[in-house]
Length: 116
Image (cartoon, rainbow, N blue to C red; front, side, top):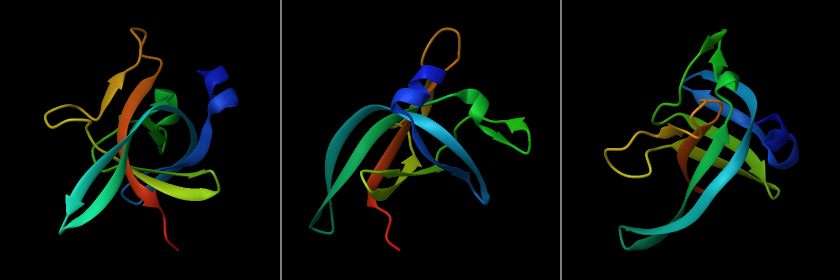
């Protein structure tokens, strides 16, 4: 995981409520997904971020991703906000990436750049 962080990692802020931590995540799968809300087309980005579970600590306590947590990172000169959401209804928002439980694949969705 350390090599992935150095070579392809993205610095950002992971938030749960008022708590936030600075950490590095590695981009995984990314898929654009369209939707229509009130007759307006909306383009979401469904993606997975690969996260070191040891980085998810608030006040020294390790935690696992939870629906509605947030990940904000600067990518291509734009600040993007991602919401932790399951990839499909009835699924968890994360899964272990390997049998050793050294990496998490966290499902997130973004609606584009952060304004302001």
